[in-house]
Amino acid sequence: MRIILIGPMGSGKSSIGKILAKKINFKFIDTDKLIEIQEGIKIKEIFNLKGEGYFRDLEVKVLKEILIARSAVIATGGGIVQREKSRLLLKNEKNVFFLNSSVKRQFERTKDSDKRPLLNKGDSFKTLKELYKKRLPHYENVSRYKIEMDNKTNDEIVEQILKNT
Image (cartoon, rainbow, N blue to C red; front, side):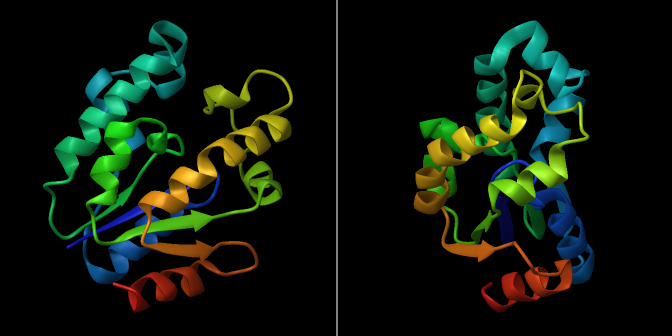
């Protein structure tokens, strides 16, 4: 069994994924970290040197590779739903959870990070709002479950995921 977490940056996919994996004794896989390992550089540098399009291609490649994993909790990057190939791969999975988070919460969780290349160009709150609006239909379309993240503890979220798997 695989549990896949999708949602906007700052929604808590990695944090929840680590807690969940530990609780059920599954492997934790973070697609962004995997890309950084394979490329040997940080995502910010990939964006700077090779562009967002190249990064999105890497996301599709990594997603294909990890969807053979068993007993794994997989946290994806916020923009993984931007490519149709990724959406089709996710749509075929049983346990895809959309961790829905308000733009305000996303902003609070990302405002002090310089690791998010899409937020390093001006008004990050506005950028988060635009990305959320653009990606929301894709998150909803490929996920089987939607979990509202605001005002919930990590334990409550993990329990909700486990209840639905």
